[in-house]
Length: 437
Ligand code: CMC
Image 1 (cartoon, protein in one colour):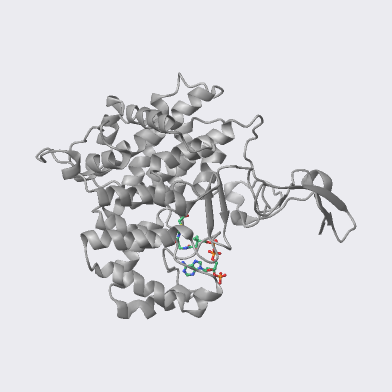
Image 2 (tube, rainbow, N blue to C red; image 1 turned 30 degrees about the vertical axis):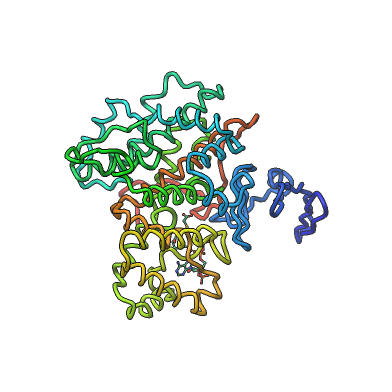
């Protein structure tokens, strides 16, 4: 294969040739537009796991995996984590620019007004067992919003699409807190419009009827609120990850947006993706003490053992995950406030140190990712373990709806429909049951 400025030429051993245009973005590697490859050569490309495939053009998030760079709409994640708030970042992701003062105030106000759930939706929770996993409830309840906001939704109207996106972002913490309270049998707490996004979430999670509300400063700890806000910023978007790609694929059929985001929540649940933060805590509990680290490192390296070091490795980051650097700092601050010497944090640091010196991890470029420390922070904030992936859902909803808005605004949209390399039987004839061998 050769490549000039604007096109790539593919020459098969048979002599057949195809010329394919290059697609260039504003930053990062170019892609080869293989849309006509099948027409020209009668061949498909084969790329399980999308190791070398760009599935779309997007102007939302840029990642440079080699150099540990993550930009939201051009702004470095480090600057946003330090100076911004989650809702400001959500505005940025959805609209492309940072908001002016009045724009942010209007955005926050509108989010506040969409935080409540339809009263009929509350009865949905009664159908779930008390011990249902909160992620199972998240999938179901987010999907069920499509039944509440269907008839009036005109997907061709940008304003209708914007309101759908705002609703999802506003309601997701309310749904998340309700999932938790259902699991412990507590009454649901209504959202409060006088609290910030993260304060409101903590209030809906933890407030008890007996709790005296003097004022918000005396009840909701600003250290917890700040930590939550930073974690939400870090998890808000990550370009074409598995769950965002799922949202895009489902949306390509023109399906209802709430159902598409429910599909994204399902994809996020797995331990290779958003479920990793919960899996990290289970893994640390299983390891238990520092002296058992070598045993588990050996298991992670053993190809016959399915065990992997959770919170390690990333498809894109091959030197460091910039989010992990920020999260590690937040972890220190939070633990200083809450639990001075959490043995789990000590264990995590020892495990990180051990793995980073190990030849296997060095050679395969496996570094701690954002979820190696996020679970420890959530644990310190008393967020239960089974809620950790739900926390990821709250944050990533900002990314999912931004990608949905971007995709739906494109002038032409095609249904996402990959091809396959068939490995089954050749054509064969039906045999009657009594004649089967
Ligand atoms: N522990 C041990 N070995 C690993 C690990 C790990 N955590 N991750 C990758 N490897 C090995 C893997 O066995 C493979 O070895 P070989 O080349 O000999 O077959 C090699 O490294 C490449 O791994 P891969 O699975 O082909 O890489 P991938 O890009 O397909 O997978 C990953 C990326 C994140 C799914 C994977 O590293 C993993 O399973 N990590 C643990 C789960 C985790 O922490 N996930 C959270 C990701 S960050 C949050 C998010 O964005 O969702």
